[in-house]
Amino acid sequence: MIRFTAIAVFGILVILGYWFSDSARARNVAGIFDELVNGSPGIDQDAFEARALAAVNETRGERGLPHLKADTQIHDAVARYGTTHSRLSELSLEGLFGRLQNEFPGAQFLSATVLLDPRDEGLHQSLADWKDVADPQYDTLSTLAFRDGLRKGCVAVLARRLPPFDLETANRDGGRFFQRCPHCQKAHAVLLDRQSQTLILNCPDCRQPYDVLAADTEGKFRRAPDFFEGFHIPDQPKTGDDPEATLVEIWSAVLRHCEYEYDRTSTRKGEAWKLPSQTWNDAAGDCEDTAILLADALNAAGIEARVAIGWNIHIGQHAWCVARIDNRQWVLESTLQLKDGETPELRTVVNAAGEYQPEQLFDRERLYFRHDGKERAGCDNYWSEAKWKPLPGR
Image 1 (tube, rainbow, N blue to C red):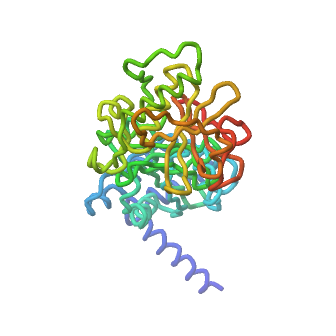
Image 2: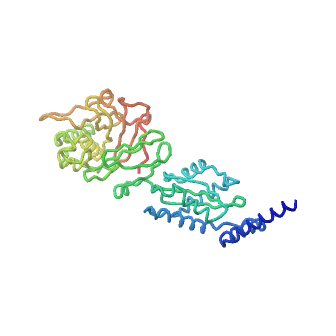
């Protein structure tokens, strides 16, 4: 028994000698015993995060990566989430991701870990060794330090938050953004594809379209309604108080003045959309250009009109104009070629429903998306609230 006690005392002395032979280890041991006697003091979160960033950025600097920054908003969100867990060492990362993505819809890049070590130096080294800190897609690091018995731990979150989608910024700087779907309210990333100059943006969650963007002749993206200018046909003849006669006169003026011309011929930039004044000055345009010109001129004359985008069973993808006076609606094809002295014949939307299959509509105020559950189908009412869902004006 005496021999066993002597061996035990010797072992304790060796351990104590190891701990106190190094000043840093001695401070850690002293801190542990102080905590056992006096309780756990508060952790200086700012100081901890500053040291954590220094350790991580040293690793990133060695790899030629830009330094990470702190994100106080994410840190505070992690701290709030942490209050729902009695032991942060057992914190649910899946639940944390859900909380952060709900609170920060632009946080499209996230990684998190929980680390434990009895020594501050070991904890910071573990952070520096975490493989995700060398991933260039992240630009911030947020840490929440805590105590777990004799150990110290931290919850570390790497993130990159996308800015909200802004068309002016996207045109100027490009890059990735986040957008909240107006249908299901879920957020997702948006990247303008400049190789495709007409973009119908769809939500990846609810699968519904929510915006139509197109590049103008200068390569600048606009929302479809922004192509309306309030254009008046020059020297438009007066037709008295007969709105139907006015409609036919404006339609005829556009058909006589404008020849059909593919975008590649007129702009050399693919599917660029023209402003109505450009189409009129060029006296030429494709289906989108002339449909926008016609709808804009009708609106300027006080006649309700919209541009429809969809399919024509003879042509394929197509754009056309629709107009309404009182309870009468017509399809106005803007690419017809009139003979001298010829006047176009009005065609009701009911009569044209077998040929024209609209998917989106827009006027100078709003976009409208089909929500009657039908695809590649005709439509007998382009103003029906049961068939068309408007998006809020921007």
